[in-house]
Length: 459
Image (cartoon, rainbow, N blue to C red):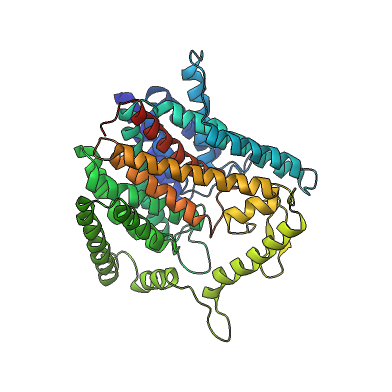
């Protein structure tokens, strides 16, 4: 176990250094993969820390031309390690029908869409990722934790730590001017909306751990993560952080319990005071006040400037244009779509389609993306999948209330809602890693629900 933590520290330290100084040679990729693999072999749950952490880095394997993101490398390593640890498979692998059926339909519809796809290779790659995430990773995440509340709580803890470290990477890159892409100075990370969603979900899990969790380690990391993830969330300049607090407050109110009103009140107070302190102190002198003010005003910006359009209008205008075009494509190709993995805009103004690849724009609506790329059957199946996930999460909340799993179920449910709501404004499915985090939330909620049904969680 001690060797596992040593390797964990080694991997995290080397990753943080290379992320901040913008150096990632090929030998580091190999070394990092080996460290992740050995960590997973010794302590599989600890390796979950690398999933949110590696999402902060936009590097690809340019040396090999594979466009493999570091976070995708982590997931592939975890799949291989899980298979090695599980061989031979003594027990059958079960899969809940409410998730398996829509997953199969999505894959089948995606295969059908290849008949009209312009870029077949990209379509096949996306289908492989659907199978990898919707089926393989779901099995790994759920089978690893079902019936074992201790493992669920440990993974919950490591996800918080990973998100906290990811916030440090983002803040360091912002401070040093590394990878602050976009129309304005912001933390962009690997993907602007994705980084914001990661920070929002970490903030929700940390808040849940602080109010409802037990154990010194969980509360320690929650307290440590909250201020940093909150600041990183603001500087990511996404509207996700507004939705994050709406989500957590709604969950507290929907539970309709008197004991939840105090955490809800404290959440409002902490957020308000934290925002005032960050703005008035310019993050204790580390940042310029105009950067913080610009981030907040951008996040609350929902209208268009009258007359001449400004750069700040672009994120809203491009979505209106892209959504309208996607709807037209759905009407024109209702059953096959235009080809899975093929809806990438070369230019948001002309809406000319480009070759799928790095830096090409998406529809910025996950649900429309499914319909437009693979047809109505894939789109409806994804909606059913999400609905089943939310229903499962609600059951997990009810069954774990008052028990040792409630902190994890509440935080993970909040995290899932961030991705579900955020999916209306950006795309997660072509981005393998963010999609995997969403499915991880769903699989953990399934495990909590299944564990409660087995009588291993106090209700």
